[in-house]
Structures are given as structure tokens and as C-alpha cells.
Length: 549
Image (cartoon, rainbow, N blue to C red):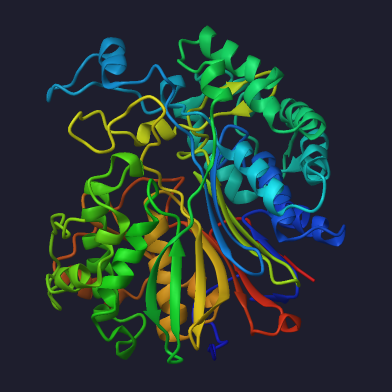
């Protein structure tokens, strides 16, 4: 891609070049990953080290009780990992109705936070699977930077501090939260030292005995005892029986401004990555590149395509074992072409789902000079997840169970051992060269429902408009909300915003201090010659860093 290396948007970041790159939402984590490459490790080693460090330096977004997904290019093939958690065996609609009652529609009520939102955490099992298959350094070595940071402490970064403080009113009374994350009775302030000795204790035990400590050993015992003490349903059997899945990827072809054919890869459901692919597939029926990049028409088409995608995603996506449709049916080009016909060029539309033919998050990316690349995402869902923190080992637990439906008619209805609808999605871009697929970019955008929307907007800026990765990352974003109203960033072109309003788009500012407009990391391979290295971008919406050498 012959990028335009100018950046027309206000930014505090420059694109970073290097033969080895780790790009994350916090400088300590990027340096932890790069340290592993300096010690002879590879990109996957770097990603695990960075992921562990991020659990310490950005606990508002992830913790030892998180889930993760990854897409790995090992130098020859592409692999997809689903390490999202499953429901405890006790969970069912009946479990919730007996405990919390029913609402006016007759469906069971359930909390948004607390123990009854915690599915079996998958992140550490995900690390284990990645390390076993691709790692080159001992796991204990990969955890050393995170252990040191947790023991010695670190000065609080500005954006982490802001999001931390925003979560306190809702979570301060959750079990273990205040002891772990309110060391002075409040959130740490910018530049204030924060230590996390309990998490260091857990990481040392895992470094010594392996990740099964979390699922079968002393840490598992502590988690289940804490669950019993506070009315949770998690058992030792739930933890010990958990397994990750190698799931491959699903894909969508996109034509680039350079005339080349690219293929965007996402993890298949239970995640929402298919939403980005649906929207991209719909937009292949329009000449988007002929429209000004920040103009009304280009943004309108992308928004409408995303609304169409979400209409199907919210109706059909669930644990793949219970879905009514396959990803292949939802991505059928003929179906997407028919959906594209529903878009009116000068008017916003509220779309229903179609009927295809039968048949709080951290994201990081790493690459090395041998050509390995990893797209990795890890999350506790909403800021600090469930708010529950096991005190002995500092296990901050996600609230992914809130992603289930309690409607028995839904494909996503809660059930024992089932995975909920998931928001976190790593992405990967391949390029077609004479029928041969070559790796181009590992990428991702964190932030709840913003994630497929961020994938769509940034990828199209790079491929259709040749904007370099940092510019595509810095550009103002819009966000389609669950009710199909629209948020726009304050720096979006005022004429474009007014034009969208005139078309009937309803702007509605959603108070979402954690998710906001997402945050991405991007590593683009500069050529097919490994010696040419990569160019990386890190989103200025977080405290991040792309570190390279």
C-alpha cells in the first residue's frame, strides 16, 4: 500500500517503524513484551508478557479473571483461539428467577455486576494454549515483568486513572473491590504509586507451577471459597473442566485502493467480529473510495452498513453450538448484496434483522523479525468487570455472564457450560498475491460494541483511502448505539455531522466513560521482505505505546 504519510488529524502520536514491534495501551506492557524479544523470545512470548503486565497496569480493563481471544500468524499459517469463559453448571434462567425474581415481561432478572455475572475465566488458559503451541521462552520468564511491576508499583497513567475513578461509585461495595483498588479509600490519582502485591503472589505461583494453579490448585481453591462466601455459583469442577478452543477464522474480501485484494479475518461467534465482516461485505457493493474520506456520504454508508450488521448480530450471534445460522450463511455475498439494497443514499434507516438462506478490554499486537504476528485481546468486559476481587491472589473477575440472554427463545439464552455473546474481537488482515495469502496487519480496537465499528472504520480508511495506520487510528469516529442512535466524536467535521443529522441520523450522547470510542493498536507489515519490518500505530485515546527496535 502506498500510504499517504501525512496525518490530517490532531494527534500526539507518530507511526513507529521497527523489525520487532509490540503495541499496547500502556507503555509498561509494550516494554515488557519487547523485553521478551530482546531475551530471545518471539512475538507470541511478547504478547503473553504484555498481557500479564496489562493486568497490573490497566486493571480497569482486564485482570487475572479475564477472557481472551487471539489470531496468530506463525510464519506459515493463521490460527484462531477462543479462550472465552463458560457459564457455571448452576446457571439457568430458573437459577436467576428464583434468586432475583422476574420482570414485567416474565423474564428472569439478573445483576450487571457481582458473582452472578462471572463466567469461568479463560485468559490464563488462553496464555497456556498459546505458549504450548508457539512459545519459545519458559512461561515463568514471561511473567517476570508483570511480577516486578506488581511488587514495586507504578505511577498511575492519566487515562487509566480517569476510568478507574469513574468506576468507583458503582463497584466500591463489591466483594474485595475496595481492598484491592481503593488503597486510600479512593481511586489512585495521576502519578500516584499503585502496588498490587496480591496479584504478584498469584503470578509467582503460576510462574512456578503453571496456569493449572488457577484452575485446579491453590488459586482455584481461593476463588471457589470466595464464591461460596458471597453467594456465587462457581465451583472447583467449573474451573477444572474449562478448556479453550482453536476455532480458526472467518473472513471477508475487501478491495484496496492499490488494486489489490485483501482479506479481513475475525474469530467466529460467539464473538461479534462477524459484524465487522458483514458491514464490509455490504460496502463492497458501493464505490466507497470515490467519496471523500471524511465526507457525509462515506460516513453515512458506513454507518448504515454497520446498523444492518448489528441487526443480524444481535439476533443471531451466540455460542455456535446453539446458533440458528452459520457464519457462512450470514456472510453469503448474495445475501449481503440484498441487504445493501436497503441502504438509502440520502436517508438514515432503522433496519430489522434479515433472514439469510438456510444452510473494558485491552488489545495488543506484536510482531517479530521472523515474520510471526499476533493479534491479541483480553478483557473483563465492563470497567473492572464484575467488581469482585478475590483478596488472597488479587483475582479481578470479569462480568461476561451479563452477555447472556434470559429469554428461553433466544439462541443466546444462559445455560450450563455455554459461552455468552462476546464483544472482544482480535482482527487480522491478509493480502492476496497471485492466489497466495500473505500476512499484512494484526489489528484490533477495544471497547464493547465499538469494536466491530472500529475495525470497519480504521480498515476502510487504510484500504480504501490509503491513510497510514496512525492517521486511520487518530481519525474521528462515530458509534452506533444499541438503539441505533449515533454518537460522534467531538472533533468530527461539523459539516459532516450536520449532514448526518439532516439525513435523519439521531445523535444521542451515551454516558459511557469506560467504553467511549474505543482504542486500537495496529502493526502493518511494510513489505514481503522481512528485513523491511513493520509500521505500528497506538491509539491516542489510551495511555499506549508502540515500542520497536
